[in-house]
Each structure stands twice: as C-alpha cells, then as structure tokens.
Image (cartoon, rainbow, N blue to C red; front, side, top):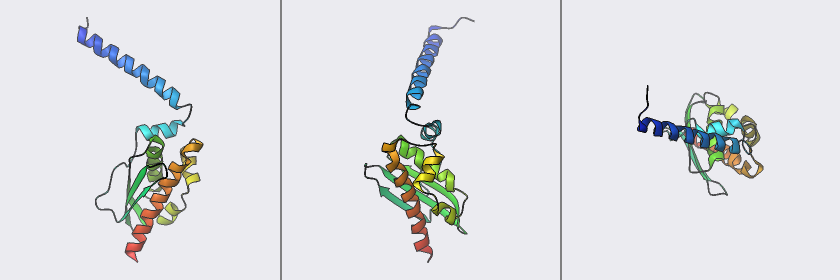
Length: 151
C-alpha cells in the first residue's frame, strides 16, 4: 500500500524522535543507573493524598522541595505519595522510597536511610546524594507528623 505524504512525514518524525530519545538515554546512562532513569521517566506514587494522616514538606539545600503524604492504618503505610519540584534524581528518589515503604510497617519505614535508598536506585552520582537525604528526611518527618497526631 502506498503511503500518503502525511503518513511518511509522521513516520519520519517518529523515527527521528525515537533516535533522539535513544541518544539521550545512552547519555543519561553514563551518569545514572537504569533504575534511576526508569523511576525518573515513569514515577510511581507521584501526587498528593487528600485524606493523608501524615504529611511533611521540606526544602533541600539545592532549592528542591519534597512533599510526602501518608495514609497509615494499624501502623501500616496503606498509601504514600510524593510531590516535588526537583530534578530527575529527586523524582527518582521520591518514587523509589514510596515503593520501598508502601504496605510496610512504620518500624520498617523508619529504618530506611539515604544509603538504603541509594542502593535501591543502584547508586546515584555523588553530587546528588542530597536528593536521597531530602527524600528520606521528608518521609521520616511525615511519619513523625502522623505519630504526633495519634499520641
């Protein structure tokens, strides 16, 4: 079947943009693990919970803001969401930490450290360690908010 000019152009555009994306992915893989890139490109649990019973917001030294909202029942994190205006590594950290603690006990979540998070991401660049610290600190602060409300 003969393609019309519009189909040819759309096909050429898609091929062109696919090649650019592949090139960008290869360049990013020089600095970031595949896992970090995946969490950044396809973040999980991004947003805010309206009915959260534990909430925190913190600003990092780099200017990134991280928010965490939790729904906790019987000491189990039923739901967790994060919201950030930060860089790709901050997005990846937020996404990864929510996956690490969703469905887990508060005691488990409080054991998550920046090192645990960085290991989950198969490492992050040294100049991005502050992203992991900001993320874990915000999650711990949201748990503290919940605990203070239930005392």
